[in-house]
Length: 198
Image 1 (cartoon, rainbow, N blue to C red):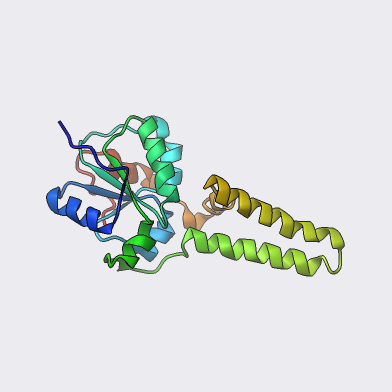
Image 2 (image 1 turned 45 degrees about the vertical axis):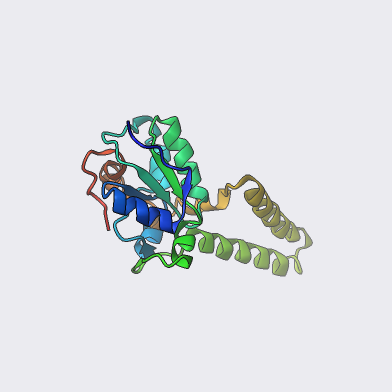
């Protein structure tokens, strides 16, 4: 019988799990550009949008435990729900994501990539609010752009979802090439899963 994983784990627990079971898979569900920018050594990149797109095909050909990783934990939780609904088990989420990992002294491979999704959202939201406020001096109804963005951010915080990040995730630098999709999924579901380890 396989041992169950806790729903969330911290940096120290991930280290202990990796030491006890070298077969553990760290699956980073952030966008490819975010992963290229920084990631946990030995982790695989299987973006959340790819999991959503292929949710009907998700079946694991292994019994390896899986720890899901994202920037702060929100997308990893969404991935866990999606994977549990697809029948995968032995899933855990890295508490605090990459941010928590780094704060607790975890090693990161640094590279060149796009900004983290949270930073992209802050930039776009800030630009929309600023533009709406400035433009409203010439045409008063444009002040509602700022109100709309504020309402959207409030809803995102309350629901722990973010429509803006989903839209930004469609940009080319945040998407996975269709030709790479199967290889990326194999990192999660395949028996050997060596495709995108970094």
